[in-house]
Image 1 (cartoon, rainbow, N blue to C red):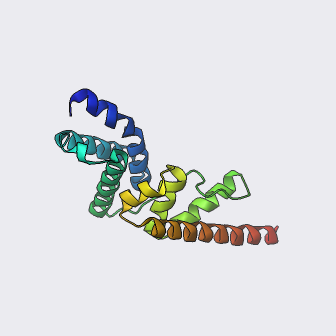
Image 2: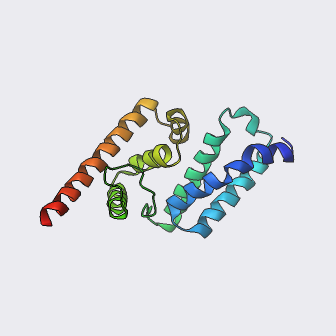
Length: 165
C-alpha cells in the first residue's frame, strides 16, 4: 500500500478513533497518543492491511485494545460522564442527560461498550461483532438489557424526583 492509498483509506478514521479513545480515557492527550500509536502501527503493517475486509472495524478494535491496555497500566476507570445522551429518554433536558450518564456508568463494561459503539458511534451490529469479538445475537441481547436497565433506572429516579416535588 502506498502513501496515498494509506491516507485515503485510513486518515478519515482518525476522528472516530480519537473520540473512542477520549471516551475510554477521558484525557485528550492520552487519546491523541493512542491515535498516533495506532497510525504508526498501521503504517508499519501497511502491506498486510489488504487482508482486512472491514478496515474501520479493525482500526476501532485496535483503538479499543490500546485504550484497555492503557487503562490497565494506569489503573484508571472509564469515565462516561461526557457522553451525549445515548439512550433517548422522553424527558429531553440537561438534567435528564446527566441522570442517563450516571446510570450508564453503572453498567457492566461490555454493555457500556456496546451502547457506545451502537448508539453513539452508529456502528452496525456486524461491525460491533468484529470489534468486540461477540456474536450479533449476544450484542443484541446485551444492548437490549442495557437500554432496559437505563430506562428502568431513569424512570425510578425521575418518578422519585416528582414525588418529592
